[in-house]
Length: 167
Image (cartoon, rainbow, N blue to C red; front, side, top):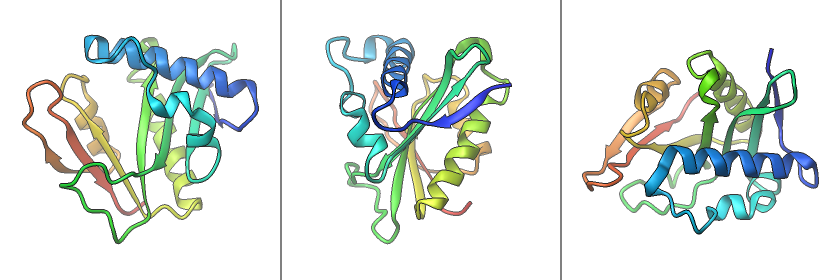
């Protein structure tokens, strides 16, 4: 049985969450990731996820090992083709599951918990993006109730934008 919990500021879980998400990001994105720089949200983890409008969840194995993560942060409107102006929108980020636990319901459990947290916080729309080089990601998010908004044609990332408005 996994233990799902929210990461709180000024706790050892902040460092564990940051390190888990950073390692997973580097593994999944490989040469597409800049190995010299930690992503800004992870470098400013507490400000992004523990204070204000963010949230970050971890799943732990019975041993206490972090085996999965997911978070949301305030959507920053950086994609001009997407307009979420009428809604209080958060961006779902950093869904990572240890390879040995994939396809075992861990990601779905984390998404369910994240949806509950977002609803309680007054979030009205959830945005995310994924990429075709992440196996099964598009189908997973569609099963979670997210709808396809736009797929970009650029050759490296082919970013697929998705949203969910009701839960």
